[in-house]
Length: 156
Image 1 (cartoon, one colour):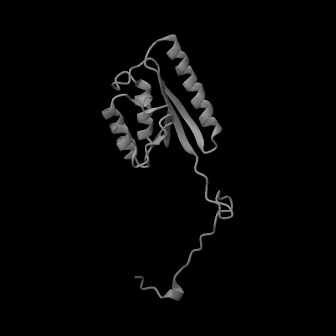
Image 2 (tube, one colour):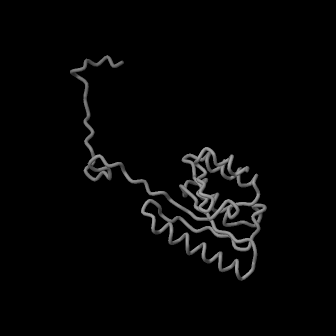
Image 3 (tube, helix red, strand yellow):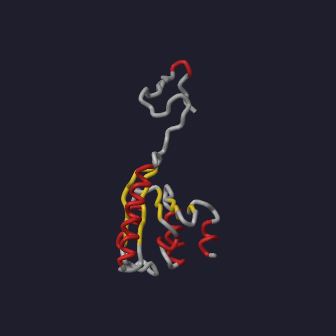
């Protein structure tokens, strides 16, 4: 407690900034830095088309959502997801998450993210443990990794 009498204390007033983005009681809109992860597992012509379609789809989807800003489309063509070996874009995406460049990842399905259940759970746990955590949205599966039941669903 200060020994200076109350009447002798200097009081500093901090005035609100006129350019604040919070106006008339409306909360500031948070724009999530969003990345997409795309992958196909074979070199076939059909899968190549699927890969291109995924990249176009996510570029457009993220661009059309006013609450998202596109960080990057990470894409590993013709690489098996049974292990993370040779999935260079996947590893780059994780690196960017760890270094605070991404708030959320969107991907087609859990099988596009990883077929190896242990790898997938380990990555989800890593991302959830970051500060701030990074969420993964699995579109076809309608799963958000921030949902508490995600790990149960992933193991079934």
